[in-house]
Structure formats: structure tokens, C-alpha cells
Length: 198
Image (cartoon, rainbow, N blue to C red):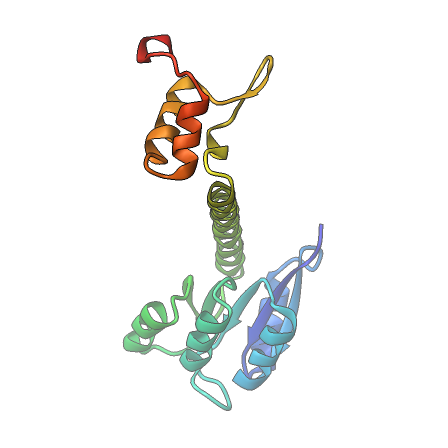
């Protein structure tokens, strides 16, 4: 199992060490960043599995970093660990940066581990669902392309004696192509059984 990379953005080295101590080294790699600029470089270069950030950073407000991370790297879940007591800042982080959890310092190790595990689990589930949707959309587009190039191909089925177009689908195809040269040729070339035979 590969290590999960946790990007920790905090100007206080002690806070980074507190996160490192809270996470088992066999499962997590803690990547420190002491500024928003450094954090964005790490996000660009390595796409960590999750981002844990303080709201007060030496070069920027942590909220700006979190919003930028949401816009540029939406698949990376964001967690705030801060000493800031400002309720409005918490609301902004949740609403604007869509942070997964908002935790207060001093850090509770089990709460942090739980938050990171939950965030990663949710991110994986969303990624799998997104992959399923994208695969289904690719198949749909391929079928539309095939249907455009070869009208009726999506109606072909595989039976015990080979590929065939069921009579009810064939009737629908003739109806869809009615008035076109292909529709006329198809209607002339086949003898369709009545609806009761399908």
C-alpha cells in the first residue's frame, strides 16, 4: 500500500510536527509547506492526497490558498486546523473553500486522523463515481458516433445463431429512416413480420 501524502501548510514548524506525530508513518507521508506559495508549488508538482492548512500564513490568508486549491485542484480534499477563533472565518472556509473539516488547535490527534481518513474515503468514492460517469459518457458518445456512421447499429443483438436486429427494432429503424434513401432501400429489401410476430 502506498503512503498517503498529506500537505500541511503552517508557518509554525511545531504545528507540522504535531500533524506528523498524529499520523502513523507507515500510512502517511507529511509534506510540510510554510507558506501559501510553497503549498501551491507542492499542489502543482505532486497533487497530494489531502491538504491541511492553517488560516493564518506568513504570505497570505489561508482562506485564499484554500479557495485557490478548490478551484485548481478540486479532487484534493481540504481540512483547516487553526488557532483562529473567528466564527466568520470558519463560515467562509466552509462556504468559499468547501473545506471538509474545520479543526481547532491545540490539535486532537484522533480527530485529525479521523478527519483525514474520512476526507480521503469521500474523495475516493467521488473519484470512482466520476470515473463511472465519464466511462458511461464515453460509451454513449462512441455509440452516437457509430449510430451516425452506421444507422441502426445500436439495434443489433447477439443471439444463438449470430447477430441480428429484432423485428420490433427493425420496424423502428425503418420508421426513423422513412423518407430517406436508406429507409426506402431498407423497407424494400426486407419483409417485416407483423407486430404480433415480434
